[in-house]
Image (cartoon, rainbow, N blue to C red; front, side, top):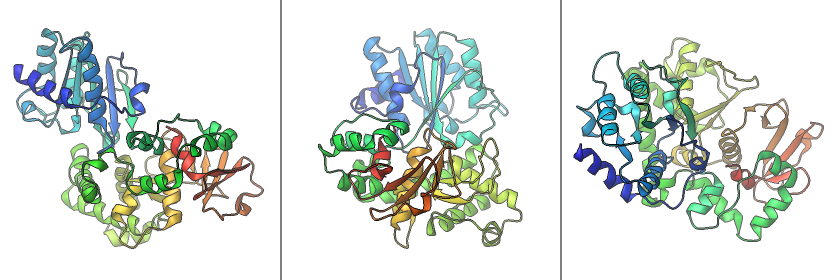
Amino acid sequence: MQQIFNYSNKLINAVNPGFKRYLFQKINWSSRLIEILGARGVGKTTLMLQKAKLLNAEIPNQAVYISMDDKLMFTNSIVDLAEELEKYGVKYLFLDEVHKYPPKQKGYDWSAEIKNSYDRFPGLKIIYSGSSVLKIYKGHGDLSRRKSSYRLTGLSFREYLELNGRGAYNKYTLNDLMERHQEISGAITREIKIIPQFKEYLRSGYFPFYHEDPDSYYDKLNSILNVIIETDIPAVSDISFETSFKLKKLLAVIASTVPYVPNLLNLRKELFVADQRTLLKYLDYLEKAEVVSTLTQEAKGNMILHKPDKIYLGNTNLIYSLNMTGEEAGTIRETFFNSQLIVAHQLRLPQNGDFLVDDKFTFEIGGKNKKSKQIKDTPHAFLVQDDIENGIFNRIPLWLFGFLY
């Protein structure tokens, strides 16, 4: 047990408690079971360690952190660990990357163990993190009625500015931007030259680890994509090596022409996929992993196997990382808008314009010379323009949508 405390305290004490992600304040830390999902590299581990550090500053050793792929978990079960730690007075157990947990017996996975720990040790709060691909996972333990679930996305443009010491700014609602964008953008642009910062963010600002090694940032992004396809998705679904290869090829096809307007018949032929249902399942895997994002004219609802009308990459950094044919400005603009809005809003493809948000507001995305003729007669319509600092009337600067979270 001393080994676990030493391991935990070493990592907790090393974390920088300064900059905290937007989700830190949104989580109800008093809940007994908390789930934090998100794509690889967005900062889930750091967020958990920061909270554990604050807790241990109040009462030493009341919080313990452990990663589920650590060698300590090769022989220890989650239930046994929870039981022993509770005896030592631990009140908070942070379990990182639960999808990597090695099950100790067939039919008894991490979700079943967490359920049993939750039921057996009411004085112990359990906070666990996992890849966003856990959305497709059907575990042996039903945690849906017990857990409070949260999703951590990549950095917003607002967070990127704060993390890089360029200023701390408020976040705004979509209604704020539509109603007060001139006032808000004016206050920000009086303090900072915003356009150069925005261009940097689009290239390399979505993931917090950029400054660890800027020269190898895109190599690391490509490595993360490989791990997602080769390890994370197979860990929570029954797919073969051949299917992993097809997922890579599918991603390569999408990345070559995003936003991708899919021809499912041609895609099936290129990937040697027998039926449309299987192909849509592959797309769903990539979307759950936040590698791609799909847009349809109809509301998705709970439908998994929907035919998308457009496919975007999950964020603009992936465009620069994957696109070997050069980056197209319109694609980057739409991908950014999509990545910022899907955090808290429903998006669909409208009859006119590029995005229909929450079934009411239409947005057309373009450069500074873009005209609004496509949405001229559309109610509740806005023109979102790149390369402008401030807007007027229904013309809103694109960068400002990076202040939504």
